[in-house]
Amino acid sequence: MMISMAGRMLRSTDMRVLWKFAYNFGWKGMLSVQRFKRRLKQGQVFPPFLYVSIINSCNLRCTGCWVDVAAPREMISLDDWNRLIENAKKHGNRFFGILGGEPFMHPNLIEMLEAHPDCYFQIFTNGHQITDELASELRRVGNATPLISVEGSEVVSDERRGRDGVLDRTLKGIEACVKARLITGVASSICQTNYDDLVTEAWVDRLIELGVHYNWFHTYRAVGPDAAPELALTPEQVHRVRNFAVEMRNEKPIGFVDAYWDDQGQALCPAATGISHHISPYGDIEPCPIVQFANESIHDNDGDIFKTMTESNLLADFRETAAGATRGCIVLERPDLLKDVVERNDSRDTTTRGEAMAELLSMSHLNSQHDPGNEVPEKHWMYRFAKKHWFFGFGAYT
Image (cartoon, one colour):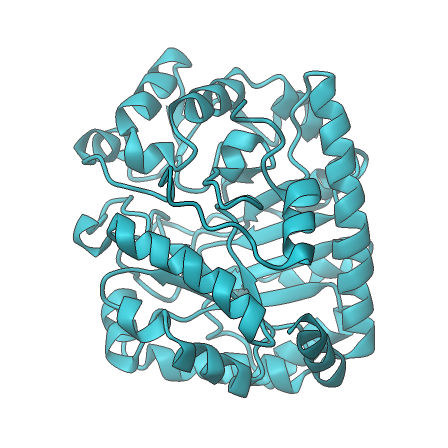
């Protein structure tokens, strides 16, 4: 299947776009992880993969969203962006995730990409802003992959995302990206209302038919002001999602991303391992997107993000506490411990609604990806090797 998938990529992707992916993300990303591992031996934790929410605004109103999308617009400025990326590049970073809100509502997004041709960016988007013209601009710049969210059928999409006609507009965005010969991904937050529709071979075949190159299944995180814990998956369903991803990437010519398990199928938290942390639209440095507390910002230490992150007591405490409690998601499994971390570090609420602690206190204990004794190891040697050496684990749980 790896050969078939590579053939699909070669036939359907612009060669310059493919080269940027292979060199900036593949080769340079591997080198950035090697530098990360060397830093770990010296007691320094600076993530090789930074995720940046560049804007809080969004055209949708999704159930379970933790972002203040209806609040006054706040954005990472172009100057702050360039300072952040340049500083991270000094320490080997070349891959960045771009989140929102809806990133394509940021007026300078193309400039942000264009300013750093030696980096690679993954843009988490609902796809509604992506026209043929914008997709052509992404192809011209060449160093970004749109990861477009699909939340189920027409009915489920409208229910989950708070608007009408959501799926149709999302599919048009996917079509524009595929037509422009971009490396195009689809992400889904798997929950009770879309589980039967999306965790199926028929849906994977549909993605391949649409021209999609890779898929990313997230399991639903019941957080935020409208947490809807009734949508959360059972442990059996989470296990099935993991097993399904492993099976499909060995049977279908499409990539499957599942960032919450290592090569042996053991659960992990990317923030607990230190491989990724998050920056909010306000510049706050947070352990991960769903932990909306911070002590530092990208403006501290004259913008030296490396110094700020490696010296952060909050990030260090979060990593140690999370890894000591579970291999899964501490937010879901042990919100009480996250509360303790926040209080120990006197961390501030980074939301505009000012209710992050109240939301944390109201959370019930839910399961996450941690399911000891039911691990599903990677089957393909290449995925096993890549996960073991370049992307996950790194001794956080030893």
